[in-house]
Amino acid sequence: MFIATERTPNPATLKFLPGREVMPEGSADFPSADTAERSPLASALFALEGVSGVFFGADFISVSKTEEADWTTLKPQILALLVEHFSAGAPLFHAGAAASEATSTDDPADAEIVRQIKTLIDEKVRPAVARDGGDILYHGFKDGVVYLHMQGACAGCPSSTMTLKQGIENLLRYYVPEVVEVRPVS
Image (cartoon, rainbow, N blue to C red):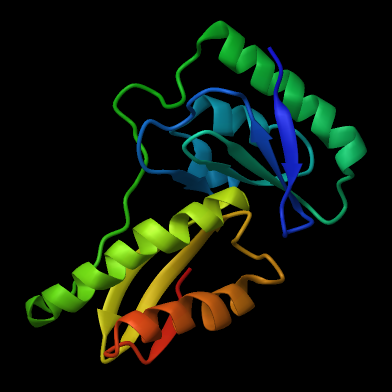
């Protein structure tokens, strides 16, 4: 089995492409070892010294490292673990566990605005963010402010603020005049 790797805009994160589907739908973010218990693969990756974050996308896995860790040492260990996992046909999640979805408490009066925002995010933003090894989740809209959560390689990326403000905020403001600002949530 061959697993390709790609750099991401975040120098602390590499994107691993196993050449097969990883998540049939949605995504799963594991920002710390404590959050990985529902996934045998995420738990195994966190067991490697230097891993600080794991993210599962549709056809990729993004792994973030600590500042002290070195990719020349860590990358082969991650590749070996991924090959073993996928070759064995091991499950991504323990039975009964699944990816978590973002929830919001939007005002029903804003339903059409929220629909437009979500459509733009799903069609224009998420594919671009996934190419960089991450995902972006909608968390809400209130008083003209859209709340979004960056995941995977995008969380903590030096360019994530610019992506939110100059990219996503400008796009949403252009198509949805009710949007005045985009803010990150953690």
